[in-house]
Length: 247
Image 1 (spheres, helix red, strand yellow):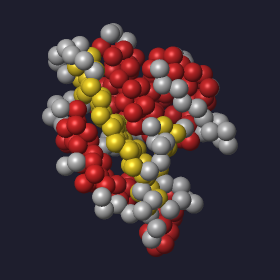
Image 2 (cartoon, helix red, strand yellow; image 1 turned 90 degrees about the horizontal axis):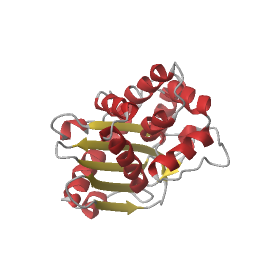
Image 3 (tube, helix red, strand yellow; image 1 turned 45 degrees about the vertical axis):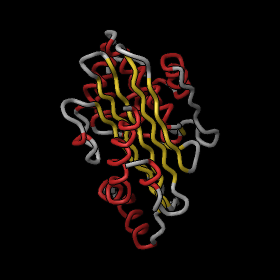
Image 4 (cartoon, helix red, strand yellow; image 1 turned 135 degrees about the vertical axis):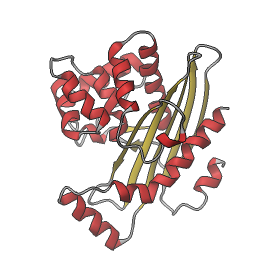
């Protein structure tokens, strides 16, 4: 299905981005992309494997990095983020990937407030995947942890074999939309790497639904099912559409 058809019936105010990239040996790089609405979006969970890649290699690195990637643990991500330093992490990512991200001036210590474009996400993950192919053992471990990630919103089932997937969600108590997002990294035997990313921020105006969502957040309950209901179906359509655009 085309990108236009996928977003045609979305409510006013929705923001959607998709980007794909094919790179590696065996042919020229190819890219595809689509954007509706905001130029940049927050997608905190998608960046956790990248933060882990460039964080300081302390003796406790793996004990924080693995749950940050596999379980999307915020507490362990903060150990890496604050232990290394937000600006240091973002500077190292810029050096390794060519993608420069900045923390918001309102809350520079918040890893979850970094705003990105989908095209930047696939570019950064291409650098991670290529580093793994060239023998970077930490990059290899992170990609394997992504294969074992527990939060996928059904996206992993779209792929045969071992594909690295990182999903995430965000919905602030004072916001009237929900963000749900995914990045996939498919490393082929021929040396090619196929990447896709989808970012969504969908209106969530129902007062009763928002009240129940806020209660769940306040009491430590799970809201993943609600993100899947609101945005999961679109994610599961955006990723194949993006890969189809790549050919």
